[in-house]
Image (cartoon, rainbow, N blue to C red; front, side):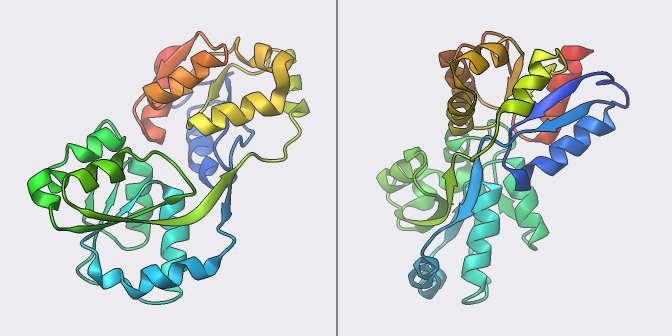
Length: 256
């Protein structure tokens, strides 16, 4: 892929802590990455929320991490209180979360090989009704989020509990540099990796700015995010699979 993105600038809107790998991959392919986080990740305000979960951690059969942020903040909060139980299996939805768990020493992670959403997780044999009935599942996530996974597991007979271990919010960011880049014709594509990030970006740049950004091709990792982009006026939408490698391949194929 060396040189495949030469002369191209891609706007990366991931939270600051998760943007580095994608930016480096774009630059390794000869392009330029312009970072404009459309989502900010902050710790939960009540650190004591981890204590009740830590006390009963041995009673869970599976701990499911919804994102790399859940891995970082969830493990940090729980490991301040106690060590991880040997028999507690970990699960995740996408390659970023699997990689983050690997960096924390977890080698055997339950995760789908494609799809990378709640539906794909629920299709895994380990989450089939006969496999989860009577089991206890801990879901580590940000505040709120989709309820499909937990509700379906509960309907299949599992005991489901949640741990909100971080919060998402719209950054206080100045959109002027981004809009100036677009106005000069120096931005070639935009990546958006969450529906919430799409809404935040629209709020940050305002109506006129959004009209300018909507003229760019946008790259997203899921049809649900594509639908949110379409709602805000984008027409050229490329849907890739999840993860940096898939997004980079989509960029290279589009511009190649």
